[in-house]
Length: 163
Image (cartoon, rainbow, N blue to C red):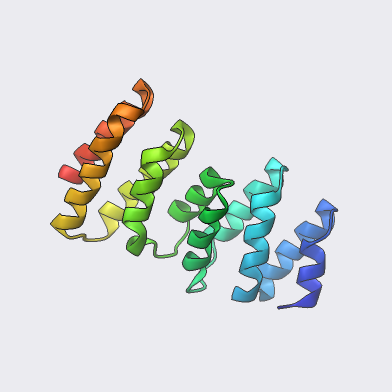
C-alpha cells in the first residue's frame, strides 16, 4: 500500500483526502480499496461520499467486486454500496442471489438501488431458470413484510424475473 495515499486518506481534512483520491486515480492499486471502502462507510460528508462513489464507478481492478461485497457485512451505507455496484464496470453477476436477499429486507431507497442493480444484471447476463425461480420465490415470500410502496417495487421485480 502506498504510504502517502494511506496518510492522506486517513486525514481528517477533506483537502488531504481529496488529494489522496486524486493520487489513487493516478497510481492506486487494489491494496487501497479497503481504505476507500472504510472511508465510504464511515464518512458523514455527502460530498465526499459522492466522490468516492464516482471513483469506485471507474475502478476496473479485478477482485474489487469481492471487497465491495464483503463491505455489505458492515451493514452501513448499503445504498451507497449498491449504487457503486450498478454504476461500476465491475462484474457482480455471481452475486445476483445476494442482491435479491438485500432487496427483500431493504428500505425503499436501498430497494430501489438493488432493483436497478438486479435489472442491469438480468439484462447483461444469463442466469439459469432455477436461479430465477428461487429469486422469484424469495421475492414473493417477502411481499407480506413490505409496505405498499415496497410491495409495488417487488411486484415489478418479479415481472422482470418472469419475462
